[in-house]
Structure formats: structure tokens, C-alpha cells
Length: 380
Image (cartoon, rainbow, N blue to C red; front, side, top):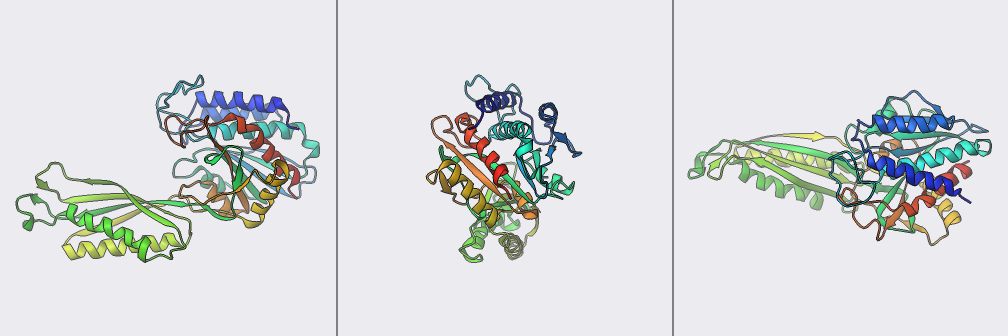
């Protein structure tokens, strides 16, 4: 039976963190708050670069090491609503649930400190900075060696995309990679009344944008789900002057690690060919983001068994893959593990992640805390 005091403390911690959000890479006060709590629990703090903070607890056997991860950063969003614990930091808010993830892992840390004599594996407690931006906080911790002695890693996400009362995941690809691109088309400007004397980069851009959709529909295996979206076009200064250049800015999302290189190659080829045909020139720049999140089949099966045994068969849900991204994928590139959704969609959590009125449902905290505890107790 889960100690109710852990849940009460988790709610208090979450609300404090929600009132005091910090942007990615700037979470120094959050880091200090976590450090103080871990030190009070006599949990060893390992030497990793702030504002991430990593705790370590040696197990009674210690022949295996599992890592549990929570992300700690907030978003550059002005929060809306009238909740009593609304953000006190203008323009910054926890609109994705990371405050809840942090509070849950702190509660698990307290449980670990109270039951250290019963825990067989070593436990690594990763409170990670900068999940929401690139360069990724996960990637930076990995480069610092955080996974060097880890056998498996697990993370949770309080998830609006799954109904409250459900907990789920899926083996293999569950979340997409994200890579951005910027295409610059160099033409030759002039007056709108004499287009024949120009190379119109806006007109050329219209062909490029349409051609990009042929990559997904005609150049990729239909079983490899991918999306190319253009979200921004920059060009011109007034209505009757054809500009010299145009910029197309967009994003690439795919569940297939192999599809990224194909898409990038085809973007360059199509853009170059179209621009050459119109007498324009082009440059293409890719901004590399997070890879696809791919759960290890064996660890996914282990997590599923824990969910079914602990909470009941009806609680488990096989999650659908989505085109959203998560930098937990970096950990899963290095070590086996699993990323888990704890469903919370309902009246309390009715707005999606990153919405100005987003809120998490604290009623799901007990299940999230218990899930981490059961993974610790049963990992062999």
C-alpha cells in the first residue's frame, strides 16, 4: 500500500514547482530545490553538470543498475486560467507536465530512502534539464557519461493523449524524430509589373513547397510514417516588388530512423532541380533534433507485465505511435528501456500539452509513483 504522505508531498512539490517555472537550460533554482530534497534523504549526488542533477542509491545486490528519469524544464508560454498555483514567472509556465514528473520522481526518491534495505538493483535518479530544446539535455548527460553503468532506463509522461485510468506504451517506435530545415531560394528581384525581368523566388517557392509532399507520398515506404510540414515563409517587403530571395522553414517528423536521411536527400535534390529550372539558386540547411523514440521490446514487455499485475489488465493500453517527439529517445539509443504514458485526459486535464490553459490531473500521481516503485522492486 502506497504511503499517502508521499502523494501529499508530491502534490505540494508539484504546485511549488509549477509556481516557479524555469526555461530549458536555466533551471538552477529547480536544481537547487531537488538537490536540497535529495540531500535531506541522504541520497548521493553524482558529479554532473547543473542544472541537471543526478542521484544514486546503491542496491543490496548492486549487480544491476536502473535509471529513472524526470524532465524539469518549463516552456516560454504565458499561462492562462485562475488556478491558485499559477506561474509567478511571467511568460514561463509548466505547460507540459514536467513539474509533475519531477514531483513524482522526488516521491519515489523518498520511498527509496525509506526502503533501501529492500532494493536489490542500484538506482540512478536523473532529473534532466532542457528536454524542450536543442541541444537536448538528455544528449548532454549521455556525453557526460550518465548511462555508463546503466543496464536499463525508464521514464514516464503524464499524458493528455490517453484517458485517465489508463497506463500504456508500445514496443518499437512510439514517438517521432524531429529535424527542422531552412531552404533559401536566391532569385533576382524587380518590379511586379515586369516579372519577365526577374527570377521570382516566391513563385519558385510555391513549386518547392508542393514538391516536398511528393517525398512522403511517392519516395518513402508507405509503412514508414513521416510528415513534412512548412510552417513559415519569409520573403518580400511590399506588395508590388518581387524580392531577391525567399526562405522556407519547416519540420520533418518520422517514426523510422532510416527515413530521415532519405527525406533530407530528396529535399536537397528536389529543391536544387526546381530552382535550376527557373534560373534560381538554393541552399538547404538542416537543424538536427531528437531521434525517434524506440522502446526496447524486452523492457516494454516487462513494463506491461508490471502494469497488468499491479493495476489490472483493463488499465493497460497499447499506445498509438505519434508524431510528437521526446528527447528520452537519446537514452534509448544507448541503453534498453521504455517510455511510459500515464493517461490523465479528463475534466481536470482537458487542454492539450503546450496549451496556455494546460493542467495535469494530480489524481494520477499515486499510480505513477507506484509504477516506478514496482519497476524497482521487480527488476532483475
